[in-house]
Length: 301
Ligand code: ADP
Ligand code: MG
Image (cartoon, rainbow, N blue to C red; front, side):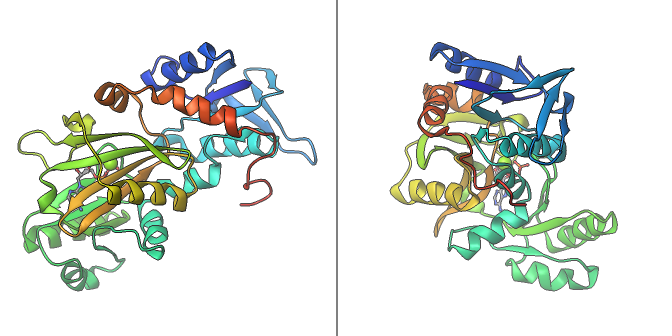
């Protein structure tokens, strides 16, 4: 197969591992920076160009689109989809998963467990919003934050009110969430590939921190999932329409709750914590599924 990896960093661990896994299986692979790609959107003949060259005869594309370049990155991916290239994850699914609120709304419709979450626009509604999620302590989140930035724990009602007021005053889109205290600063990352959890790790926040992100100093260890956790992760990825996803769960008293579904999950933490060849499994999935024009996105929004 001829595979393109849409990534800004050929030297990043995940990109390197995917290149390695593809090449070792005899595929031709090329890393393309989405921001240096440009498109010709003409009737019946959409083309993609890269540094003066036309990109042609590609079978499959692995999008590794950073949160800060979602708009342009998904446009390039969509162009490839229009050309009949098989995407590991579809552009619509990536766009969907980048908005935490939209994701939770879609998951709630299908009965997936999640922290009680509220969303409001007017400062007048703050007291009721706080009550709705069960009062302080509570978590306040920017809708488009990543790596733990933009996630705040408000310990008291007073603190919650002033932080929410400040965010709304800045016109930031935030959601307010029940704090799952019993998770003890840990979350579970489930790596789903093609409808199966292929690897899972527990991330524990460092001392004095509630956010378990590895970028925030969290540490990862191997974890054994319960059947309910496995089922929740698989279903969440499926609802989001993602073939490959990093589904993050919290262990709440009432069972697993989904925090977010990541469409470009990093491979370094999970491969190192579990010793699994996740990159290899991703390429294997592509081998089984990459057929030209096999994307539901074609012609859709
Ligand atoms: P990001 O996209 O920035 O990673 P998350 O929603 O994943 O944002 O939150 C970051 C971390 O904060 C999580 O990994 C988890 O450890 C902690 N956290 C987030 N929401 C809650 C919550 N409702 N209850 C308890 N801990 C939470
Ligand atoms: Mg997270």
